[in-house]
Length: 387
Image (cartoon, rainbow, N blue to C red; front, side):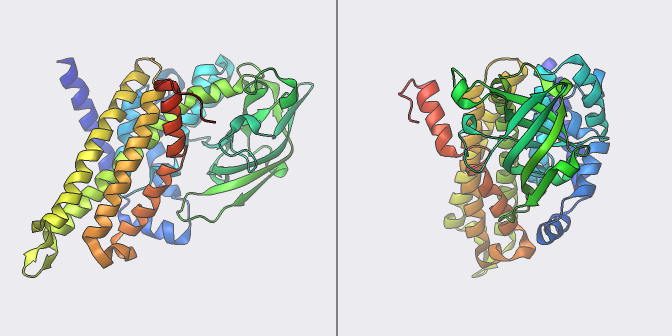
């Protein structure tokens, strides 16, 4: 009986999100993509209906739901032809405040994030010279009295132009002065609006409309009360949030994959060549069927990872594998869709080429799939560390 209730709730979430997305048809996403615009009205609608605050406890103004429910929201957005990447960070960045922040920080920030009064969409971690080697970042936060002074640079910081707050990882102890390379990093909540005159944001022109930027800090100030947890162990806090990020990204990838399947099946049934629908040909059927099975299998790993996350169990392996498997399956589905549509797949009016570009991102972000393979090799299978 309990399982039936949960499934019914999930069905209601899917239907509600789908209904909201119908107000933003593919022409809307096509136009924002062509103009390189941020989908402000869509993000506002999601915020107004409470979908971006599903992981925030009710006592702080959120829905108090779990990772499974959050995954459904993002999956349905992408399956509708939209792009949840415009706002997904708000779901996983605030998790650091929930798990490691003080009660004062939760009271000050979470209700405003839940209501939409403040947007926490930016996560400043990656730097040009460090890449995936997070322990080598150089942006420094120097403590001076009751504040930290930040200088440095971040890159691939998406949505910085559309955020009020940023979760910022910075070094507070020089790397050469720490016993372990993962020490000496601290995590902060930076008020970007308040420090706007000390922050320079430069958009990066990319293959997809992802609102990503590089950010420069010149004596930006952060009050000590905005330090999350303890100084020097911010890397640990970031790692604890990566499982959520992996699961949510996997959910978007599942949505993209099912989008490709939905559109491929529709087109293969409607497109008639040589007096028969092209879907009657096994050469068209088989790639679509194979891609569908791969997505369904990958989705099970996503579901398992989300279930473990909600149970409070360490799900690092499952979260990483879900991200890998869904992105690979969806890329195959994208290729099947392009083959099904033929030349029309390259025509912007059909939207396949747009989603094809968007789906490719998840093979390299937020972590490259080769690094997932290294993680599984070392931490799951017990093979020697490869890097």
